[in-house]
Length: 98
Image (cartoon, rainbow, N blue to C red; front, side):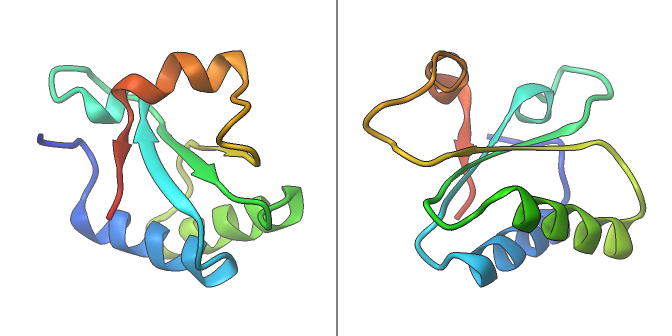
């Protein structure tokens, strides 16, 4: 599957997120997984018990410094066995990064 995000951006996000939680599972979802879609922000879903609001901010700031400011939405789900309705909706089309 062809994603609308560079390999460098993917690797940077993975390395940054895993630096905060080496057990995290990371997914890309939304328009960036649809090669026919136009524009769109970068939507990331993270399964993690360690990543909180402060760490999400650090991930965004690090990404902006490396790639310039762009829309980066980060959703953190703490319990993969009790998914929120939103995550249940997006997960089937999400692409695991790495």
